[in-house]
Length: 455
Image 1: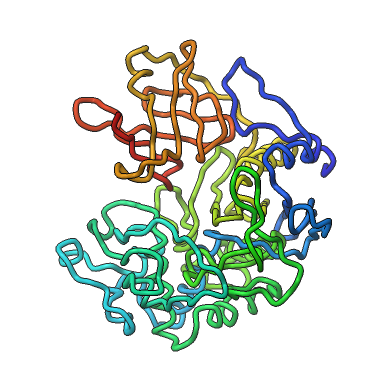
Image 2: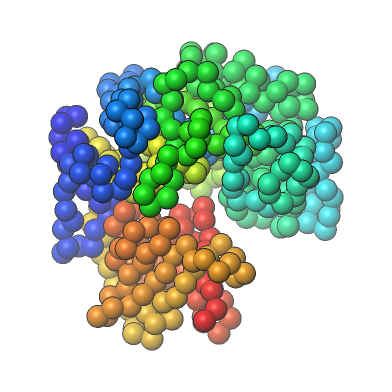
């Protein structure tokens, strides 16, 4: 089965009538410029296989293995949510009470948005607090690192703007690393401990995870260095950036340890084990995708509910998912900016081989669009209207829409409806329409919003 997967990488998605290619893992690692990838698969709570491929640093000849640590980026968030729920279990924090009284080191600003609906821990953990700051940039480990309060205040040496609340808490979901930074400070202020220490005590140790950590500098040499840019350049020594925004982006781990933790979350949902009580486990991962989960995203691919998260830091890309009933789970970590596309191809091969629907190769029906609407879709898209560098560009050639840029290598942009699209690598993209029916933005997987630039 492992050999079948290694020889059977394929795009996540294809248009019906246009069968996609099949590649080897070695071919696609070279194509995407990914020096190393680590994969683990579990069934019924047990890791059935784990393999690592490639080298810790490009050109070093030092191989990775199943115990090599990778920076897990935003996979840190569901682990932080789990740690926060242990405080709820102990009665030290109320999930639905205003969060402001718990914050001693930084005053959560009151404003017109929060006056009627105060921010709660549930809002923070479900990306519904209305908090700003999508993600964080990282720091060289030798540089001065800001405290949690300095990050939230946007005070030196923090390299991001202050975290504010600019929409009504609970009104809608908007992915926010800033919200998780508030949750990190809440945990620190309530416990009087550093966040890393508390997660070790409340999550890692009870779950039996001996390698996972939130350290700024790794104490072992068995670490996969991050690689950035189109040429996969190694990050300067020590080979990675530090993230004092630990809850949002700072965890180091292995695929096998992620699966052990995910399996215990799935067991807790069934009332088994002693990770957290069943009631709280079903707050973390609810019984329906219509309910907001805490930390994890939720998906219903057609063969059972799945809890899932992606991760992207400079130099690293990651994905972790588990069927909520615990029957199967996968974790994939890479040490490259360009690892996201490779992860989707590997996950597609795994799903195809085992016959499940999550992340598996799928053919979709497409629709025809009027030419005027195709032309309206073309243009450059970026984080904000003030940006000069586009992250994605949509073009029209011979009647076909294409998309390319930092978001994805040049790919067909397939419509499944007038305002919903996919690309073969697996991304689902919704088009936002503004005044006078003009395209205003792209929503990528509900996690990233790119604004259409003028001109």
